Length: 134
Image (tube, rainbow, N blue to C red):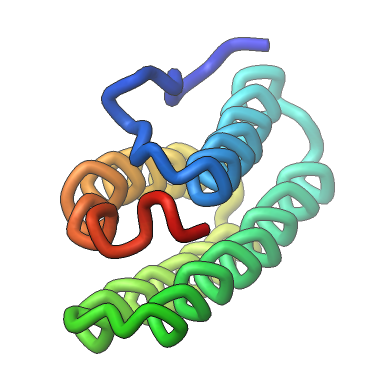
């Protein structure tokens, strides 16, 4: 399987639960990339996008539960990032249903850019609070 987004130590937060979730998320994104490369049917791609949506909800809920549990002071700003992401993903999915070919690349580019920035910047802000507690 080819990878659009290759996991490396740079992305590790040192919080096993979150790191494993990020790896799973990236695996779904790479699955989408491979479907695109193989020119698989749009129903297969749509199924992967749905999986990505579902996993996004799971992962964000997990982080948000930790924020509440440990009193993350930047919680509201982080929640806004999560909500913005979910809205954009939903918008891209709707666009995909109308124009599958061009949108798959747009979706993958969005995911790659957003995840890289989110893990390396936004998620690093809660490491000192959560590391060793989860």
